[in-house]
Image (cartoon, rainbow, N blue to C red):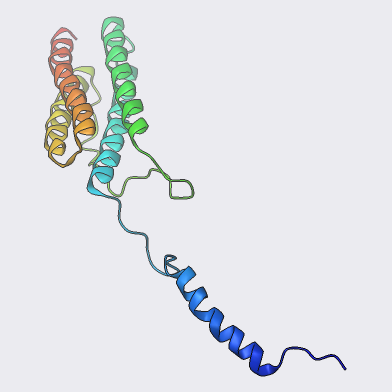
Length: 172
């Protein structure tokens, strides 16, 4: 006759395994929502969304400047700078594997639509650039030094776009 483990031995072994299982699972959150991203990540995502919006505005402005080659060329140069800004911002956003994409928690207001005429569009772009520079300046306070440096550089660049757009508006 073969003797296997007794019922009492199996119960004792399973009772001893429960604390090990509980200890192993303590770090795992089964139910609940993930914590919100830190403030600097939220601000970085907002800056990325704002650059994407600015880029779309520039595409529209370039389309409206089709008959004005000098303005279209100058706008294309400013657009290229915004595309570089976006690339730099995206490079700073680290998204862990398996997490949601880099979608911002909130997004800046799209603002009023651009006017149909080129002069109005350029004026609206100049106002948007000025507002972006001011917004980025306010964001600096919540950023770690390396990201604050990047945002300050982008804010300065956007502020320099204002006189360029104003000049283009006068000449159009």
